[in-house]
Length: 89
Image (cartoon, rainbow, N blue to C red):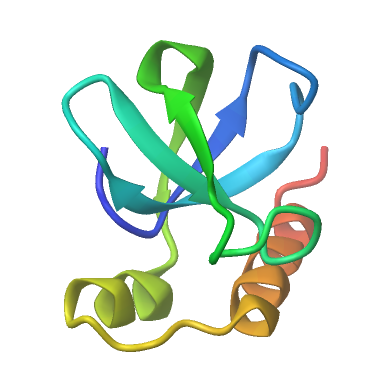
């Protein structure tokens, strides 16, 4: 699991939604956000076993998070929306 990685929630009320990892808390927990209903400031604490990684990373978001720069909710929301549009089956 790494910053900016796109994950799918597989458990809980938010099951089936895509999020991005915005903080790694410890080896069992991460904080996830989508920039829309779940903002970066109030990122959801989620157990790693309750999410499934997509194997893809939002490079611009990851770079900003790693360098301690501010990521806006609108940037994150847009990036996840584009990811969803490109990966519809």
